[in-house]
Image 1 (cartoon, rainbow, N blue to C red):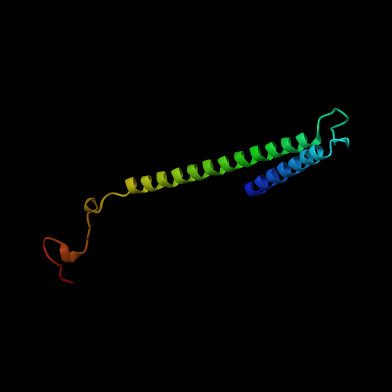
Image 2: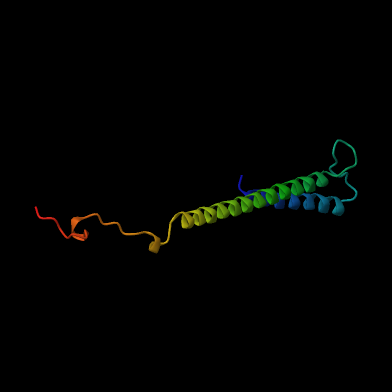
Length: 109
């Protein structure tokens, strides 16, 4: 699931919990929605689900940022290794084994 969906669901649950609390506040004469007749409003369940989704969103986001940092460090390490494994151009002698460059000159056929 994408992190943005988790954040959206957190906002939906928060909105739902707020609506339940608002309805219970504006209608004090009616019995509120409770969890198994415990007297605890079902709005608290919605708030808990909102917090759960916020936690999941934050964990997914931090995991993605850690993965990006690891990938970037790996790219830098590979680039550094490639630079170190390649000797500088002045250290690469140009070996030419043709007869034209021999000290005795070219050999006759």
